[in-house]
Length: 300
Ligand code: PSU
Ligand code: MN
Image 1 (cartoon, rainbow, N blue to C red):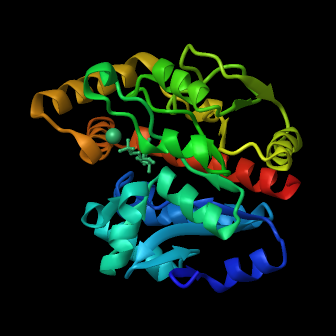
Image 2 (image 1 turned 90 degrees about the vertical axis):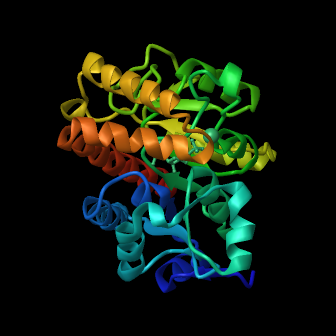
């Protein structure tokens, strides 16, 4: 496709059928402060390579759909922060047509991964059904994308800025299997459990790869959600982080923040209030997910 640009490393790997994993860019521009965001993005790429997979960080730059970025492009996205538009499914064609830049969400990255033939994607947390969604109808396009696009997303669950119970209900409706890696419990990003269960527990990358392969062979469309709990030593105190999240959600409501702005607002609030500790946890769980995604891609 004319509008897609591959980095030489990704192009070569795809041509030779070597394992590739996709990485998103909203987490760089909107999810973490500079310069830790750029450092984390580069480390993710390094960890993917160390685990035998070529990293394909995805973004829209100058209207091009980029699969695989240079260090300079990562630096640009990290430095620009929220000045770069957050790009989900609805935004991709408009930004590309205007020749603009976009940091891709989970949904946006799944679309590029699928166009490129990349089967596995690692991130931190996915979007989901927001608290109060019965009134606001705020449901992330990430869930819709998981329902329709054949990419396995490895994450550490969803932050409890969301209604995790409703998020799991929605995934069930959309036919998305939720696979816990080494756990029966749905993790809540900063903590290893949300109090909800997953659909299946699997204990090896090979077992996960077999389920993904079978789904593709049977032609059953849609994604697979692999949830990988934050490493024990980085997990946070549940009551503390829940109180911070509760206050952030209330602040967002009182300020009337809506639509695509609410998730970045909540992420920034949590970051400001908890400072370094939540960021450290965030970074650790992303690395953990990249490692697992690389192993799944190899097993595929
Ligand atoms: N949740 C996080 N960190 C993130 C995001 C969500 O803990 O960086 C980002 C991801 O890119 C995700 C997007 O795809 O926010 C979801 O936004 P929304 O809720 O507006 O769909
Ligand atoms: Mn939303």
